[in-house]
Image 1 (cartoon, one colour):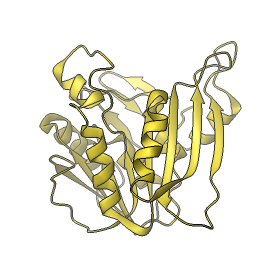
Image 2 (tube, rainbow, N blue to C red; image 1 turned 90 degrees about the vertical axis):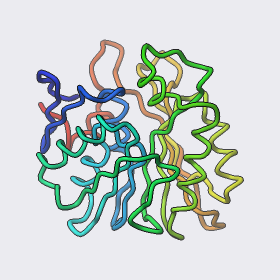
Image 3 (tube, rainbow, N blue to C red; image 1 turned 120 degrees about the horizontal axis):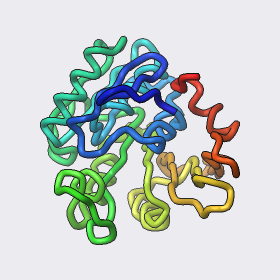
Length: 241
């Protein structure tokens, strides 16, 4: 989906370097950034931005007056995210903050849209490096703290968008229900038609009797390994032919 160059990736409107980041650019992150409903959100927060891919995708898709704050714990990744932002057309829309998403001094008290790819299951997956382990999994129940912090920062009519491994689905829904948040949209992602879903994309909103949840399914590649029409349609604003 991205044209790979030495130590970087070319999207339609911006270029990404990720060699200083524990978590590299992936099809999953590209899909998530393209799937999230941005609408007319003016105050946007990217929790755990890595190289800045989600912040840049949201900058491309959001209103010209929108402002995006992107927070990243790892100093090297935060520096690279800043470099990617400065090299993009939206350096005036994105602010990179280096720090912990739980304790960071945020520029806004409330955000219309919060996107996050939180760490999951410290004892469930194994990683090749300590940096990658922290980026993917966190420690203990840190991902719950991410969700709680996001709920605290959410504007009354705002939305939280989350990407997670399928194993976390029930836990996340229950956790956010306890915070008076409910599913507005849920997309189950399969890598191919014959494989079980491995990823889930969520959007959560404040509890509302008028809210009707939307449930979707998406297959990334067909039986012969080509990207599906649905996947191409969602990611067309970033896909290079």
